[in-house]
Image 1 (cartoon, rainbow, N blue to C red):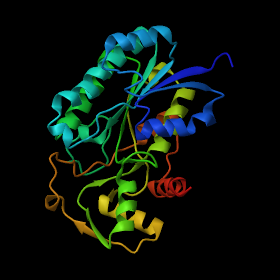
Image 2: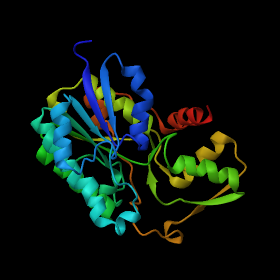
Image 3: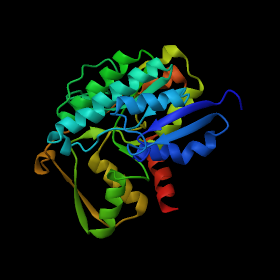
Image 4: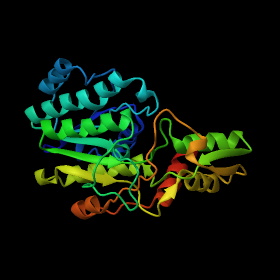
Length: 291
């Protein structure tokens, strides 16, 4: 097909990158995918990156590469900013030079958790830790260096790939008679496969005026991590007891926002996209995990 678009996926070994890999065959009539890990293409290396863009005609770049070890980021500050800010600036600069549309993935951690109703794209940012601060700098670098950047902020991402809350809970519930889960942090989960499918839908109908910041998470009721754990327990029919605990009894090096519910109205309206509820998406992920 002559007008097939080429999509570069960075961070191919992460959970979102792997979800793109899983659904890519469904979109092969529309897109050619190039998947790169940090070993394949170090995006912190501007010269190597420019060489790559020079040799490959890339229509869209979806940047799934990120430093996401929230607690380790508090001590690995330089590395965190290298990946989450400087590398993003490199990508954005070269995407602009080579007429590539950039879609950059960001996070609810750019907010401080003091909101009491779903957070819109216009609300004031105030990250609590190094990870959130670096991701905010990454957003700014992406937009400043490429006016055709689309930033998607997401929250509580999980998948059948990689390490995440859902997989951890399933493992612990199979190993232990009881577990403790924080009950005073509120948000909405995001199934990475839904995010991947949504991004490809956006690309399919792309117009340059779509650039800007959007929120994405699954829809449904706002829940705590404890509520989410109970839904996972129900899904796998576990007998494990799930005890609710306050955050202060489980101290971590990095502070988490206590309220992370993202308002997804802008994305749903702009792109006429219906986002599945987190309960339905959890069940679909569980089916994938059990196959």
